[in-house]
Image (cartoon, rainbow, N blue to C red; front, top):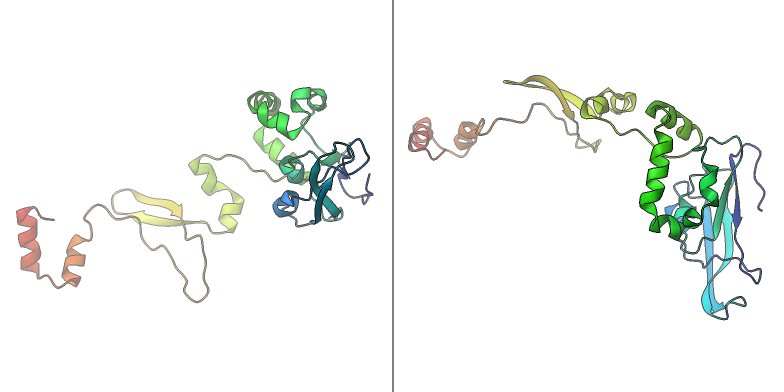
Length: 228
């Protein structure tokens, strides 16, 4: 087991095969998916495994900065050979379902994927025991990326949405005032802003035609013919 700092909420280890070699094949999937960018994998040349007699990928060096790891376990989920172990410390909040670890159908990532429906049913039954806000607070405190699934009105009431100014209030001539999503990208030299609600069908037709050079009489004629 690799050492960990006292403040961390989990420990890390690489599994080994029957010959005592680490199972990591150096595919770098864990390195690419790590949100904290704390994993470094040095891929070695393929060579024969003493345990199986077959050629496989090898890892010449695997490092993980435990002082920055958030123990999200994404590396565990993507590892194709179940080479990574993340062990939660007792103080880390969990689903209180340690019994699932002893069930063969959930023992490996491949088996969990194969029995995804059954696993989801078990997790959903456990999640139903607590309020949504309690789970979100508990998992965020443990460093697990998560968030609630909102209805539309709850989205706009979220403090983080307000802080990011992700929504803006507009006024519609028929529907009154309501909030819509603001521009996602904020550019310093070419700032964009939403200044009005979505127009009604044909609301600006006359203005557009006038800008194109049509006279008031021409526009009236088009309306009379039902062309616009």
